[in-house]
Image (cartoon, rainbow, N blue to C red; front, side, top):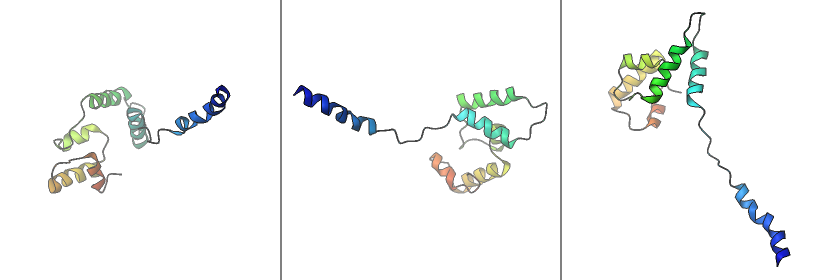
Length: 111
């Protein structure tokens, strides 16, 4: 009986190893946002990275409510283009407040 247990025990643990978390892990959001921002911004020698980091930290601690944000608030966020801001405001005017983040997919200029 002991031998049978020793022979079968490695096979009994295989199903536990086969169960892998199949959901993709979200990327490190602040780092990804900074990298995207820097790629899209033509920075010159006097660009202050500390200001960008401070702004992103501020919005990380106090997320912006897209249903209440005005054009100036969205521009200060520095993550959306002018077209995206106008499309978001137009969408809110015609369809009303956003109910889910998945509704952002319905806005034409949002990728």
